[in-house]
Length: 128
Image (tube, rainbow, N blue to C red; front, top):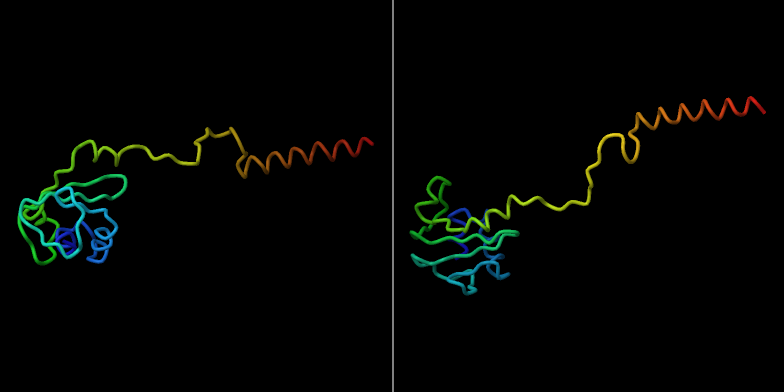
């Protein structure tokens, strides 16, 4: 199983594939498996890569890593559109966008404020 997932470029390395299988992120025909499991034509493989659960169908067996253009010969991506749509959802971020001029001043604005405040304070001290 780990060799097949690596060969059809679902994972970059065999160790990544084996780790995913051991951590129950890979299902074959809706059942957990071991990295050493034999792959059969027609198997349905589900791979959880957050936030999407990809689904593949085994079309042909393969023993060595394939170029990206040959992958559809061996493996068919049957991931539903609803799952793929999760990739396009906006991500929640801590940073809140603000318009220029609101909130904290920029460095240039801060220098302008400081020079203005220096002028006001020095003028008041001369009057005393």
